Length: 366
Ligand SMILES: NC(=O)c1ccc[n+]([C@@H]2O[C@H](COP(=O)([O-])OP(=O)(O)OC[C@H]3O[C@@H](n4cnc5c(N)ncnc54)[C@H](O)[C@@H]3O)[C@@H](O)[C@H]2O)c1
Image (cartoon, rainbow, N blue to C red):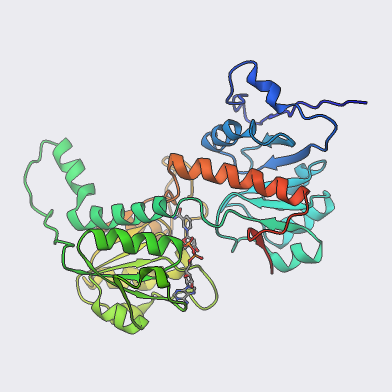
């Protein structure tokens, strides 16, 4: 007997129902006599739905349902009847959630991001729930954003934009410094750090780096130094190492004191790398020429949310935003067309690989 199943691609909260294909192309969704893997997407934004729906025709055998709802212990039960959930960097995949996903019969957690510090890996492993992630979708997307932040705070673009809109054409407060022939210090030279090193090299900067493993592909133009040497010599410090016990609060009062006066610090990696209280103290002490943050410790309730009508009480974010030489973006380093397409392709391939029992480098183990 031949069976045919049309994936639902349904959604909550009135998200529009599109498959990203012209009529007729929808036939591609049919798959004869094979298992259709059901994936429930949490924390879905409209651009997630668009990019995944656009790729869906190339991955028959996968059925997607999109929820705007956040993945958390109280919402995990919605996954009952699904093989997999798809979560993002701001999803709560901690102990309570993994317990509920296990009860709901979920076998796979697909992370549509690189980081996995929000997942209780040992518990997932205990329950036999596999985790697959997208380790590198577009390192250049994040590295280019890191340089955008560095240039913005250096040349005060955020101030210039609002000044000119107010017919204020004076240059007061806008003076920057040349990156050309200055020193860029890259902390972590994996995929994104390497891309940032190449960008800085392209600007004519001297590039130094600190990593626990040296990246041989960069040795033509990057000099590896100790962290202390990097802090002492760099005019621009850009953080690209993961958040782990060993890197938590690596930028703190002590390490800030070792930096050059007038340094620019950029963090596009994870908020926990920087101890915010100490950063604020350093900014107040005029240590930094500028600070660019795409990630910060308090970001979780803010990321991808419109909180413009709220009063942010007791907020270190609000304190950071009060400084003229600080630029904050809300975890948008990854947010380019190329990166979203790559994330969707790899995530859907991860689902098919799981179903086929294929071991790949995208599996995350405890
Ligand atoms: N802002 C965003 O939108 C965004 C998007 C993707 C990734 N990220 C962040 O960027 C980070 C880097 O991503 P990647 O793809 O380059 O990762 P990667 O694994 O390719 O590189 C990480 C590098 O950090 C190094 N490292 C580990 N411990 C270190 C330490 N104690 N000191 C210095 N270096 C250390 C590793 O050896 C490795 O070379 C991720 O961990 C993630 O947190 C942010």
